[in-house]
Length: 227
Length: 139
Image 1 (cartoon, each protein chain N blue to C red):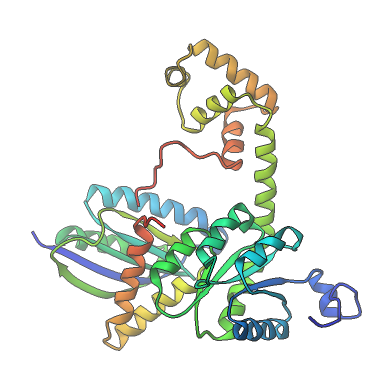
Image 2: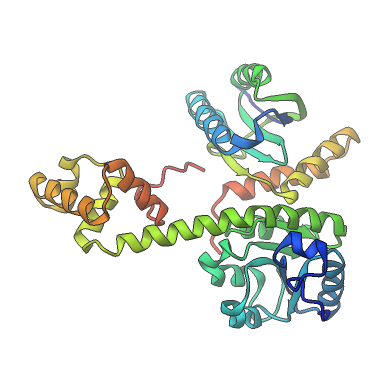
């Protein structure tokens, strides 16, 4: 990287941009790493390259949020495996997958696993930059969403395991009577649990509890998706 | 009765600011309508463009296309492939993908371009893409 620190003023562009737009290139091919690094840096991004997914994951905790350009085909950990290991961190590190031509199943798998886009080699730099602009525009939203999720999930730590089960039933849209029968307790006890958990969460309505539960990452038990 | 399958592409008129909600509404409406009519297929939405494969009995496909063409949430409906089919590609109907993706947008554009040139490859790839988005492939 060049010696200039984008945050150290002097450069108007850097002052407006406020923070570097980090792009992490993960590719086992050194030619591609070098080419991408140069193209990205010339376009005003702050690239860093890694020769393997493992190298990147080892360092991720020390890295600023940014977009990952991830090669699909790599020895050791392949791109899809790196995606899996990223887990929830993908909200702070959105992934654009890069691969050779004509891999529809892999592209779709990657996108189902949370990659925001997929780009086939050889590609025009403008295409890559277009995707990156979109990714950086969406990044603050993603970071806020992650923050909300963390807060909501912290809040649910206050509940007893039984109360969490009740919340799950509420998320599933069950009535008190059905909750009682699912959990094998009396409807009266369900009411007590509900009152207690609303106190503990300091929430005023059932709708808020359900919204918070969904925000924390809880899912309805019955999958409604038909596809 | 014979099965009919078609793929069309159109330009979205959805307000970009509420595109997520509008798309969810659209999918919910289409899903229940298509279920009633035993229409199956897949919708893709990306980069302000819709692509949809719809298949079912001839009459149902014709009726649904009439209502699709009249829908004000899009314009410029262009059928890029229409054939009779011995069997269905999809068991039900659903949204395959909805969001900004250059990959999906390019696949749709390539299908239109190939349709213009009387070529099949882009259309074939678009259908494969729809199928991939729909099936649950174990990794």
